[in-house]
Length: 332
Image (cartoon, rainbow, N blue to C red; front, side, top):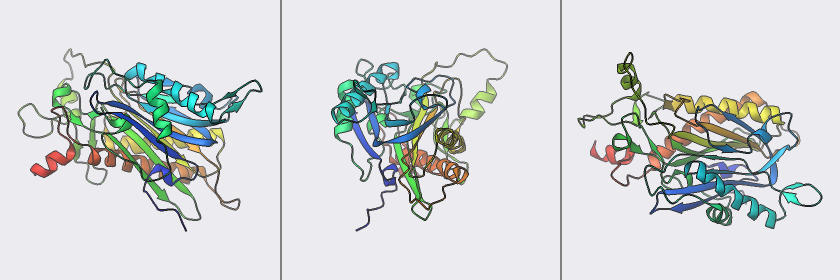
């Protein structure tokens, strides 16, 4: 019996996803497990990143594979969640064999959600461990869950005029057994637009309640004026995965190309206030005869990244006074 199609990153063989969510504090983390190892890459384009183990994903570094990626809220504090993932994987005997120990390679990226929920509660090692325990290769819960629990978008006019976003995932079967998937937590400074129409789906809301303020239009109106934005409190963090056989250079290229999908639907993207970071994982479990061209994998990584971001917006639910896309849609 063939595996059910989830339209999720878990459609990629060898990939599992688990969430840990604190609905009261509005924060959480999401782990992408690849326990058999996956060639990793990363491309970091925002000006305010919070990351761990990204150097090991670059070419010219010893480690060739990652064993998990953790996405978390909590700003820099949330990087502690990776410690729980490392502990879980060590207990499973998963990691890089250094003879005296097995060391799991776990890159991580965080987003800032401290200004939305309870800033004293952040994802920690226990939450990272719990996310691993919850991980599976089935359908992935989207919206206000895991790293997307406290995610918001459209913050040029402050959090009160922002909108609720969340976590989304998507995948595509390219034929001959080749699959590309993505998962992303959307916490952007800018707006999220429909890639088909260019219309804003979620973002900064006008002060007079007349609709969207349009972040780009607001930025244009501030040209020539002295203005201080709210600081580095935004980011889109995600993972793209494929069962293609890629080397580290190719995996990094796929991560780079996946940012094209981010830029199609987040406007503006990659600002100095965002920490936009995308990881790539190649499990290499495709057919021995399958030709997996890196250009094709990268092109579709951008497609599924854009779709996953849109799904994150559609799945989000309004909370703590901030509306979500579905709330505005219901109002017409």
